[in-house]
Length: 182
Image (cartoon, rainbow, N blue to C red; front, side, top):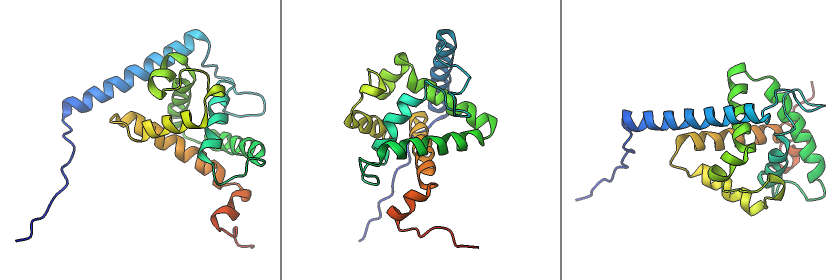
């Protein structure tokens, strides 16, 4: 007789859902309050950007090369980072206010040492983090048992990849000939 195996769904009760929600709220609330009180969460964008702030750039400048490893040569990386940041800023500037607020909170959590270390495993500054450290952080969030960290990973991945693949220089790597001439 042939037996059929089924995948068991995770045991998610209302209680565990509330715990995750409360943990996420507490974490983001603490990070936001700490950032506001410490002056880290400046709402003014860095010169030349519409949304991205000075505090967001070290993380993004460390993250982008790790995410684009293999798609970009090391010689091209500085200009690719700059262009991807500009596209990312453009995309963030066109998000709904609520999504933008959540993204800014995510960047605040990643910028603050008090939350960055325990959540990412990167205890020093992002400028001093190695590619291995950043890859470990990404894998940690991707495989986390906390849905909030998985959502953070997915958001970062989508933001960076959309910003990179909207650039014409990325199209050749994936075999896209570009939009048809009209």
